[in-house]
Image (cartoon, rainbow, N blue to C red; front, side, top):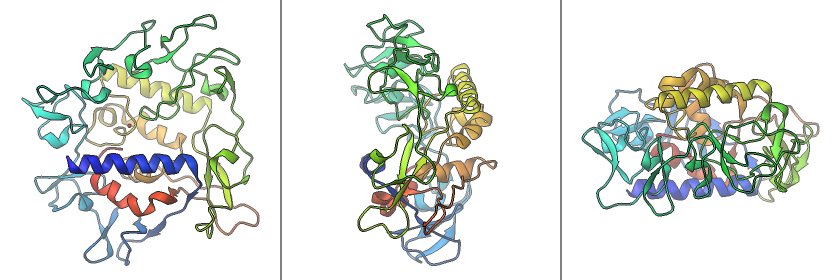
Length: 364
């Protein structure tokens, strides 16, 4: 339980730092070289051994372990590296560690909420139910059904919570990516499902404005300077710090995190449909978990989707580990810039990333 509480705190810090300030590139260290576990991250396939202070090869699935850090994106269960935390409520399990949330325990081969406990979020309830405001699991709504209580999570996993048309006043469950330019939309962000699982048509580069209508996304021009993410124009833009800007948090460059393209819309749509057909949770923290339903049933689309967003932190490690086809994006070398933009880690969390990877065997 202490591990999960620590994870929650770390993820909260990660989210806050990512949203409010520019990010910096982590110092990646090759396998076999010395590393500082508080400020450096080992390249894919290695972890920073805190005793030897050296980047050491990660133990493969089925190998012996004494701590989660040795297993990379896997969990150390009964001293064996094993995919953990992949099963939501009512999905099959062997160990308690297989269950997604600490509120779930493995009971008779299924992840269940402990007797007398209430749900804390929708994964506790499984795929066909959501965690209502009452703390009880209720059935999700189908297309056209109400989603006034918990919005996205009250809808079936392949639907979003929005308005049926421009005259509608109540939110109902509708198909994603159907709203066109100037249509009424619901701008609530959902950081737990796949990136930008929204009602506006991302294939036409549309996003939901703060005024509640679909508008064209206008990302910042390449190499636009910034000091915080608010300096960048696009909804998915991040302010990526330049080297040497740690002390004053200035000198960043705007970089897009998500691609708004017809190809990515097609990939997202196929992934959503595949997960719904196979009863898989639509939760981005589980997509790259090699023990989970989404990865095993929909791997083709999961790995294609990784090319549609700029992976950072655990997402980057998990994507590179799970998908052989995944390659880190390379950005432009900006004029008067001291470095080439690469996938980054929020600077507030560099010292925490190793703890995330050590604890976290999922990525929601």
